[in-house]
Image (tube, rainbow, N blue to C red):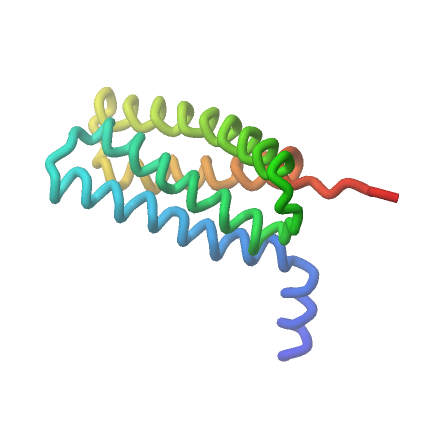
Length: 141
């Protein structure tokens, strides 16, 4: 049984680690959102954007180091990856914000339920963007 789990982990390591850090990134998003709205009384839509920005920064660092194990720390590579990463995350931020606004303001869905539903879609898109565009492996030979 342990051999089966080991084999599954080796086969799907990147996805498993992405899910773990995806959960942590989502926690950064949710905790900061709740603190901003409930403790500081900041507007829900503004808090959503701020919490997403904090989550994007956390996600870049963890994706680079732990998920995709990208060891290139040259300034040019870092800036290029960060620019791609943040650009694509801004796309999903706009999608997130648009869906959040429609669901909370027009459809009157609870804000926490909305964040959960929207987060699932965004997490999937972010993985695809990160794997295929930002941290894609290149054959250097």
